[in-house]
Amino acid sequence: MKCNITSVPGYADTSKIKNPGLEIKLEKEFAYHKTQIPATISTYRQVAKEHFGNIPPSDVLDFGAGLGVGTREFGFDSYEPFPQRGLEKYGWTPDYTEPGQINKEYKGLISNAVLNVIPNVNGERDAAVRAIGKSLAPGGKGFVAARGKAFLKELQNPEPYGDGVVTSSGSFQKGFTRAELRDYVARILGPDFVVAPAKLGDMSVLITRIR
Image (tube, rainbow, N blue to C red; front, side, top):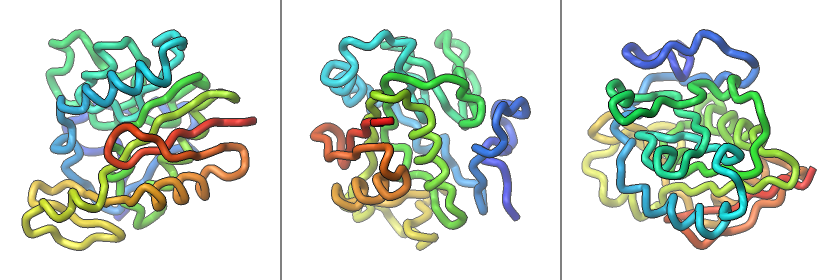
């Protein structure tokens, strides 16, 4: 049975949706909080320095903010559909918990190791990519990184699911090659965006909205 991506018990109430058409549906629930780790901060720092140095933090969206480590350090706006309990002690809660709540277009966006944890059995990952595109202003740039295929070889007893696997912790993972990630994101976003390989992160692309 389909469920709303934010309907997992114990997570934030996201019933106030500005644009229900941007809801992301999942065929089953996964342990998304198990994929949220603080080690991603080094990538945030590199991306902020290389791509967002001249953009005010409030004009950058952290799409899939996880534990909020990058958001808290740089002051970016944040979208996180599965905020863990207790984040308030850090003085941080996400600005958005549904993609349909994102009510502005940003000059910069970072989505770090997010697409690889979203399955695509019913187009869930496609919807996330479209939400990334809709969140960018014309001329805006988005950095999107995902796990590479080598990461999957490190997993113990993964179970096939869709185009990826379910790990022993109950999370979903898909590995990308650099060309696969670039071609996939470009196909979903269409001709209004330029998608080019990026150097930072594991497998990454830089999206530019041209109109």
